[in-house]
Image 1 (cartoon, rainbow, N blue to C red):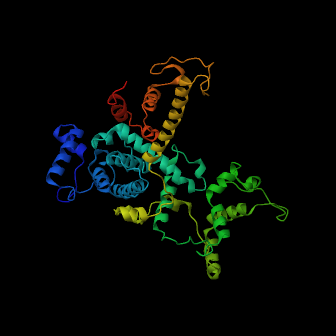
Image 2 (cartoon, rainbow, N blue to C red):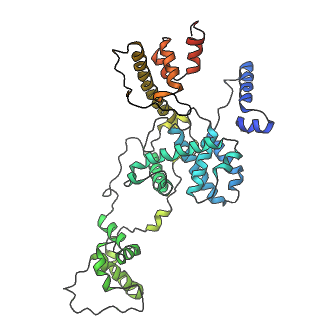
Image 3 (cartoon, rainbow, N blue to C red):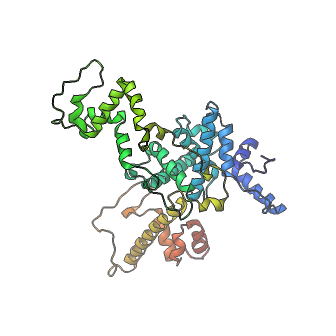
Length: 404
């Protein structure tokens, strides 16, 4: 780490020397200020931290080398997407590293417990769970671009992640302003694509279970070799769907391979059709995107992965501000009702019974409401109360104001 000019995580150092991480942080700030090292102090590299954790963790020591390399690229891709989504803004980086590695491990069917990995990197388990939840929720938002995006939830996002990551990877590789090529520009014939899809064995299975329109045609063929097909006298009177005919023809070629070889020369002059194999979809990870490698923050923010989100801490702060605004308005009404009982238009129902619960007072007024009332009475501005720094405001305006 010293040769690479990379700083060690404070949690790791604090655990090694046996001291409190906050005490170590205060000492680091004193040393940095005393020696004026702020300009020379290296920034924490979250991508290198992920690669280092994946390499040194005991949770991944039994994973195959090729799979481990794939997981590293996927982890770098996702953690840089998380940085772009501001999931690391104002937060400790190691819990996010744990969350991404746990998700990638689950994606590659590697069993890793979040508690074990969090303990190895000296991160709080509760914080790692919170980052993991935020990561899943953000991926669900990003998955809304999929045709079935409305059905994607945090419970099934892992199953849909291959499609989502493949979309984000191709989206990040597209140049700004570049239009997506249509199927006609790519030279694909949709009729050939659909026919080839219908030729798959899965379609025949669905027809046997009533999943396709060829349910009535299943009487004309069978998958069992010992079952004979019924005789057919008048072919013109039969109503057989095209997909059923295609399946019957394929079964005929399987039983008579020489027929296929004899027709190969005749069809050589015909145009080539688009071949679709559903098994190709399993190789969903390509790793060709630049996000699979370490990028500078400016380059990272310029990439488009299909979705842009606001920082979760900012969104949570806005929600809390709205809640405090509602408490401030309710406190002003209560104060007005007490000061002018005949003219006040209170919102509290007089017939509502007082609730006596632990930590609460009558009329659902808790300790925060009482603090807000006290601050309003002492003339504190509502904009300052919305920020929620109650202890500081009480020290400035109540305990040091000379009045009680």
